[in-house]
Picture 1 (cartoon, one colour):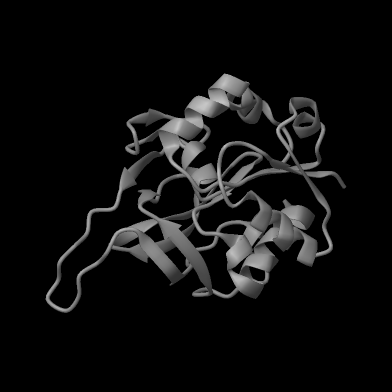
Picture 2 (picture 1 turned 30 degrees about the horizontal axis):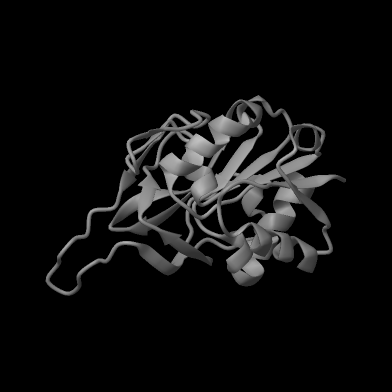
Length: 200
């Protein structure tokens, strides 16, 4: 099986590669269109800023390539947000795979606590609707680092809650995406990556 990690101007790519290596999966990190197009599975990770990243994807022609892919694709963190319709970060038109808008968390002051942005750390997952979460338990914890979120909607396949319920994961046709970082989420994240490679 040929697994490709899309190389572009975003961080965190190598940590995804290392996580796959721990599962015994050798992936190729590349920005070459033909290699991406011919892969069996494609992973679109990312840590960065939406508008500059979309500008880069358009400049390299990767925006049109990604939306044209027919094999299973997994977006991670910024990758998931860029697969949505629009992001408030830089008022950015995104890839439009998922019919969701990405919005900035608004900190909330309560009597007992003050929520902070970004949402950073471990949080639980609920309401699974995909084989991506096979062999997981409701309430399992994964690792998040994000200031922007996609609301829960028609393509939501897992929910988490920080300030408000939001999409922890999305799926539409062959496109899957997680707001959290499976590569940083210990055994739970490893199972999700394994499920994507073996079951999606």
